Image (cartoon, rainbow, N blue to C red; front, side, top):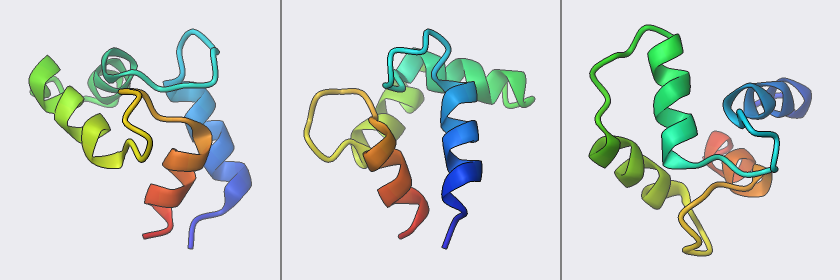
Length: 70
């Protein structure tokens, strides 16, 4: 199980605009900053879609936390 405080910090780092949601573009950017330049827009969108529980095409913290604890 992930540590919720660490997860919140990681979520905040990925959520570049601070709106409380991670978009595919923010996710792709975070991966690129971490050195993974090979992630395309299509791949980032697919990853978000897999983890997006309510179908709104973005990840809330609850969805992010749920994924970390699977």
